[in-house]
Structure formats: structure tokens, C-alpha cells
Image (cartoon, rainbow, N blue to C red; front, side, top):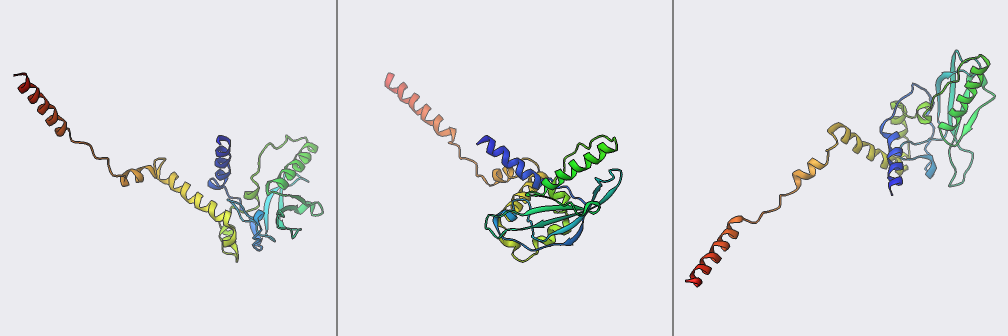
Length: 212
């Protein structure tokens, strides 16, 4: 149970702390209501396209545009979205994976090969795939949420409710919720001490009279 709880916190963490990467939106795509085309943090529209500027693997001292796409090549109900990246300077060598991060890892490996050729240090960094696909961009988020059938991506909207709750905690402090509950709780009534004292005195008077 403890491991599951920790895993859930990490999973929701990427929803809570979203960074954004400047992107050029080309095509927002269409909603695919199959289960794997959304999760608690993102919706992955099929046909989505955006450009991100990043380091060139051909010349790691410069940047070039990278076309990020979300595609599907299967009609199966359990199919996964495919995330594809094509660099402007290597258009005949697209890289793909079943997560937004997977092709970016390949991009980094390719860049480090280019850096090695130029006797440069390897680039040691981690890339958050959804961010580098532009999926955290406010424009993209709002446009995706407004697409037809977006409301059917139930896991995403459930995750958004959690995000709103977490933001409430962050804004109002760690005791947010507890204080509200305390205000609504009615204090437990205490038994008056006077009754106990009266009973004690009455017993004492009876004992005194009987001894006389």
C-alpha cells in the first residue's frame, strides 16, 4: 500500500508542477476516445503537430526545429498513441516511441553522438516529453479541452479535479481542509462538574447522619 501511495504521488506530481516549453502549434488534431489516448495529466489528440526548437544533432552548437507529432497506426481498442519527432536537419530519420519522452531520449542520444564527434562533453539532462511536445502550453491545453469529445476523456478530467484540489492546498497552506472541518465540527458536550459535587456532598451527609 505504501509503494502504491508513493507511486500515485509521483504520478500526480507531473500534473501539479507543469513547466512549459515555447512551441509553434501546427495542428491540434482530433480526440481519440480510446483509453490510452489520455491519462490523468494529458490528452493526446491524433494528428497533433507542433514545432519545438532544440539542439541540432548534426551541429550541436546550433538549434533547429523539431516537428512533434502524435499519430495512430492501429484501430485496436487497446492501441497506444505513437509519438514521433522529425528534426529539420534530418527529415528522413524520424524517431518514434509509445510515450512523449521516448523519442526525446533518442534525440538526446543522437545529439551526444554529434557532440562526441566535435569533442564536446555529453549533454547530461532529462527531458519531460509532454512539455517538449508543447502539451503543457496554455494555448494547447485550452484548445485540446475545447475539442469535440474531449469530455469523454474521463481520466483526464478526474486528474484535473485532483490538480485543482492540490492547488487549493498549495494556496491555502497544508492545513487547508482540516481547519474547515474543525469549524464545522460541534464541540462535544462536557458533563457538568456540579452534579458530581452534589452527589459527593449528599453521600457525605448521609454517612455523617448514619454514624450519629
